[in-house]
Length: 113
Length: 113
Image (tube, rainbow over the protein chains, first blue to last red):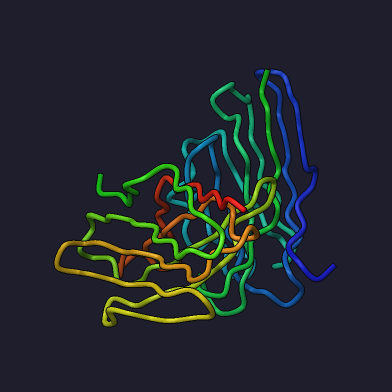
């Protein structure tokens, strides 16, 4: 597709379980961002990749959160031992020109029950 | 910590009228600002941006004004249309924060026909 694709669209998981959220960026985009958006709030920065490497992971809330981008394209956000407070929409964005030209995906709504 | 915020959570306007959405920021180190539009179930969509060395920038039907003296940002939408109904976020980038954006809490714009 032409845009940023995130799968699944919705994910319901039980507290304590492990989840993986996938982001397919726009082809050729070297920069990739993960944000988290709680209900009624603006997105919060999690991590930024330039190519395969995490250039800035200062937004990851704790060591239960981890993200990879092994081939510089698809990225996976991994959350271990999920907690109810992790429930949010997880947004991915990609860009070829930095944050100004970033396009966001539709997000994955994660619900931890 | 310092953050971006908005004055009004909901703004209701008549179709055809002009809309003004306001945003206050507190970080004087921010050098770049973006306005995003987010429709229900979708990711944020870039509307317009402005650098801190400017005080006004115009796009198609939209204008962003930046007042660094009072740390205030506004988005003006001319001839508001029903399709403009959405939540609008301002976001700032600190000049030493690379590609990380800090988002405000959002304003919901409702356009009455």
